[in-house]
Length: 244
Image 1 (cartoon, rainbow, N blue to C red):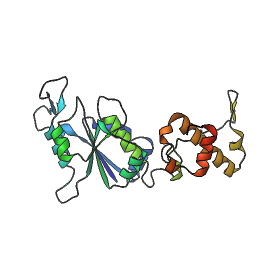
Image 2 (tube, helix red, strand yellow; image 1 turned 90 degrees about the vertical axis):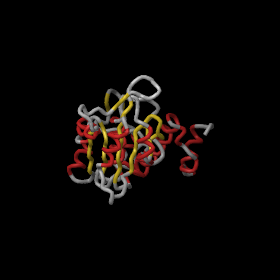
Image 3 (tube, helix red, strand yellow; image 1 turned 30 degrees about the vertical axis):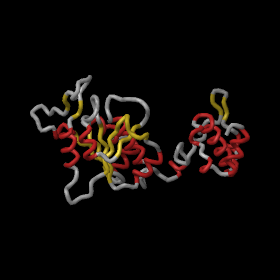
Image 4 (cartoon, one colour; image 1 turned 180 degrees about the horizontal axis):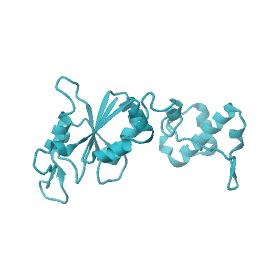
């Protein structure tokens, strides 16, 4: 898979995408990540990519042409158009399911806005979808783009050591992850739950499922849709909450 990031700050994106698990995956050829500077396509002496908004208002707007030319430089006319995502507070909220879906594509392009936004005409012309990582506003689209890229890369074959690494994580299976512990068995007077030391894997799996359900019920009850729960899950939740 190839992920392109269109940005005014390619060095920032390269720094993050070159570290840890994603950096190792890039070096091993599991994923290709290319960060392209939109300013290189400004087409003017000072590499200016923004201008004042029509109608007045605070701030500056990123112009359409530099973004369009940057995107068009990524592929030739005989190649399929890459799927372009604009990171925007107005977009649909990104989630784990969308990360899985995007990981099945051959190529994804992430457009990072800046200043007060992007000329709507280039959005209408080339953007396939708009995504947000939450109900808040950042100074630029780089952090959201890096978040999406990281989440998608982790779903690719060979990036993590085993599929089990993400299949039991929060959100992947529809519930939040159970608590985790490591050595020592006692710390600051707090002990690891006995079941985790028992060696009884059936009991451990049962404990983990119960904990996942209870944590999800407490923190994210909106995730507990009836169609995704087993009868056993429903009995567990009914035991702890008559409101479910």
